Length: 244
Image 1 (tube, rainbow, N blue to C red):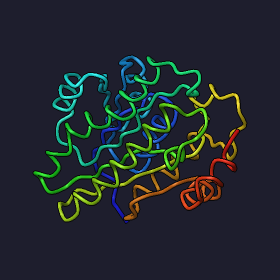
Image 2: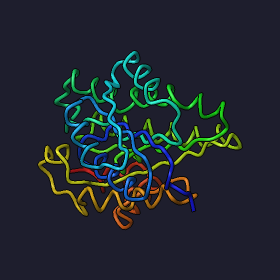
Image 3: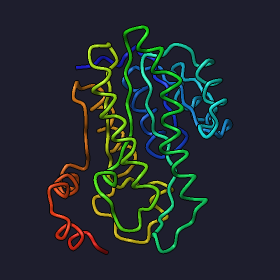
């Protein structure tokens, strides 16, 4: 089991929702957390609420300069948890180019910016822990998920590739794929969301997985089996079963 107590983790995308709940859960496990997002005031309030040496570091992950500057200020860390994400429900027939590009820039390219700022240092030191947040929506294309589903599929592939490449470097990689979590993002959905979870319950599973030596976790368990199983369906059946 991985020891979290006494370790220093940089949480990117921690101001609300799952990221906020994970910050509290990690602090409860004895980790020192550095919480990051764009809203500096909200981050300071969060760090104060967490206590126990929690630090706040505002960052705009759409800007490489901002990410590099934040990483330098954060300094040496034991682990990084990428939780940042934006979402708008969108069909290809109702394409919003600006929103789609924003999802790609934050959810996908933002992960490259942030990991690129810390992973080389971890490799050089021969130690580190990288946790990437995917989604059940990333396993296969879904209706009305232009932008979000594609970006999550991208970061899931990124985590899998890093798992290969960082073997025997001392840098561990984990991928966590949640289902629906009650946040401001899911409040935008007008469809039924099965097995939707509160952020605190999801954060408990999230951090429990971080303690483990396993690579990936998809949850809720029953709901995730549905999505994982979809990968083995022939196209004609998949598009019939998953249409809305």
